[in-house]
Amino acid sequence: MPEIEVHSLASGSSGNSMLVRAGDRFLLIDAGLSARTLSSLLNHRGVHPNSLAAVLLTHEHDDHLRGAAGVARRFQAPVVANRATLHAASDRVALENTEELETGAETALGPFAVRSFAVSHDAAEPVGYVVTVGTYTVAYATDVGCVSHELRDAMRSASLCIIESNHDLEWLRRGPYPPYMKARVAGDTGHLSNEDAASLIAERLEQGPPAAFWLAHLSAVNNSPSFARKYAHNALKSRTTAAHWIEVALRDRPSLVWHPGQYTIQPSLF
Image 1 (spheres, helix red, strand yellow):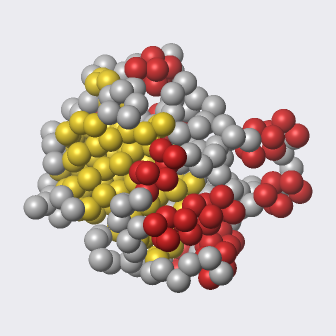
Image 2 (cartoon, helix red, strand yellow; image 1 turned 135 degrees about the vertical axis):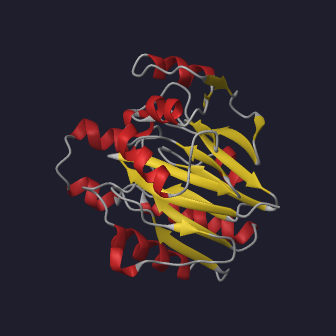
Image 3 (tube, rainbow, N blue to C red; image 1 turned 90 degrees about the vertical axis):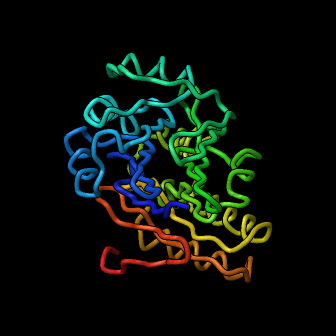
């Protein structure tokens, strides 16, 4: 069975991208950095043409899409998404090699078993992904306006859950955003708050086995890595006694690497 490894390349409004490795094959989830930056990051991690199984798109917003066309072309990999996302993305970038994956459907991409699931966000047909390699499963959901049955189900047996913890509600309320933007962020098709993420993690821990959690897509204005992590830890103290590991994926640079059974934090980054 190939070894699985997950790298956080970036996670925030300036760009989102996660790299999953299984042996000598790779899978990219979102490509929101420039193609040049992403290509450099992938080369540094041993990705070469034909070793990238696919580029998965969650939705068509630029911070998830920006480098998809260039990376897919350079590494000779298909861009995989549902039809609505591919159609919306085609209005922004020139995608050449695409494969449709209906929302809720499963497919095999090299050693990766991939299933998409619906999430609530202001995009054409946004999704999250469940990626399985052998006995290990990774659940990925950023840009999520509200918690749904599909999201809970995706996280239930995952060994690593990468979930949005975008903003603190009080920071958002007092912050500089105009009223319409505050309403969008806090709305059901916007982004999950620290409280939303903590509640979801607590619920998952009471219903499933121990897991690692990465808090993702933090706002540069309405949150901070140290605050989000502290909030989650404090909230979980009173809600669960289950074993868990919580880390924060940084917005603007590579930060975390996950291996099964290894839960490491990089405190210097906070």
